[in-house]
Length: 136
Image (cartoon, rainbow, N blue to C red; front, top):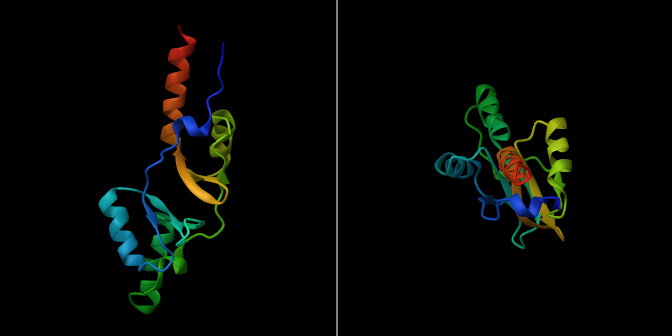
């Protein structure tokens, strides 16, 4: 019997989050320290309000070239329009989405609360498990 794997089966439930009022340089320090390429930005109630990626942080360098070292909060640099998915979505649909976008991760939201994230690498684990299951 073939069981369709879902996002909830492979998503990471422990992840780094940032707050919109955090200093962007503190956020960059966290990303470097944790060796991550981006992090979800959540408000005080845990609602997803954006994402801060390495690419977003590069804006600080661009601004630096023109006007000296900028200051700002995460909210000044984060991407506010975030693609989210449901934990109940099947991994095949998510793989198709990853093929159409440049993002390395998709944030998993349930009732506007961040419950996880899934990366391309997580989907590779799904492929590996499907292959093992199908070969039995």
